[in-house]
Amino acid sequence: MLENISAAPPDPILGLTEAFQQDSRSGKINLTTGVYKDEQGNTPILECVKRAEEKLLKDEKSKGYLGIDGLAEFLNSVRELALPGLAAEDQVAVFQSPGGTGALRVAADFVAKNFAGSRVWLSTPTWPNHPAIFQAAGLETKQYPYLSADRKSLDAAACLETLEKEGRAGDVICLHACCHNPSGVDPNSEQWQQIAELTARIGMLPLIDFAYHGFGDGLQQDRAGIERMAKHHQEYLICSSYSKNFGLYSERIGALMAVCPDAVSTVKVRSNIKTCVRSNYSNPPRHGGAIVACVLGDTELRSLWTSELAAMRDRIHQMRSAFVEAMRHRSPDVDFSFLMDQRGMFSFSGLTPMQVDWLKSEKGIYIVGSGRINVAGITPSNLDYLCDSIAEALSS
Ligand SMILES: Cc1ncc(COP(=O)(O)O)c(C=O)c1O
Image (cartoon, rainbow, N blue to C red; front, side, top):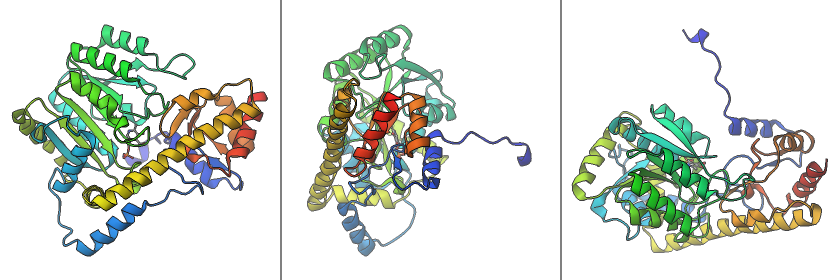
């Protein structure tokens, strides 16, 4: 049987990283994967995480299985982090998951099992794994327009028009809470309000992907979209990731939160999500959740975390403005100032697939074919080479 299987296509982004690793040029730059890099180009372990791990190593008593939903301290602290004052404790079913991806897959299974005919609306563009995850759960995916033709801002009118015309009660609307991947373009408060009102009127179930909490403007500011949605929706799903904001990529830690209209439905929803987890990975891995719970539950570690998170966020902002400024001098005819309105690690640079190819083959600069760049991959020491090369690509 196995010999008759044909090879699946490689993951487009991870494939580029492999090519990058094999590239022997010393000045090569990787702006592809969604991983934070510091000024030296490293992905460091946060100090708060190191200290939490020291504590855990000392205090840990058992490697026994966790419950299906995870560590109680973790579940409480991430609920408070994502939804402070937005929903009572007994209105939220929270699950510790293997990364944000695990949370999305469990949410997808939950929807597929319980809401026959429900379709999942995804922004065009979106994180490429979104359609794959929902389709793997057997759900139909639909697309709503998101960006203006020049891909620099949100086309809210087109988005609302499509949802108004084609959205149905019982459909799921997938939204990025902040730092939209791949564009960095987020709705402003008026646009969130319009999306919230319309989707509530239609009767859609919001599924909010919260993968970059704290990478946009701050922990509180990045919740603004969720707060808007909560004003109009009594029920919604949140899929959080702690890969980026705690730098816990390889620990695989995230959370699924199902906000329910009342305590009775929470109990029923929780029991149904448990069945999805059980047949998926049975129960979550402990370590990442224990770290997050330890940091959030300790005043000193929590304040260290918020300052380390702010430092990552500030560095990304600084690199955005340094890039825009450097390009203004090198290519005055091409305006990159729109990058300053975008948030998070990613932005569409506006580079064409041909320019992206040229930068890879001639300069060893790796960018996703869509022109998406990971701004966190820019450092003070690679900025000049990067901008000289992009200017050359633009002029040739
Ligand atoms: C929009 C979005 N959602 C979810 C995820 C998944 O995060 P995790 O690595 O925690 O599975 C990512 C990761 O890149 C992402 O960009």
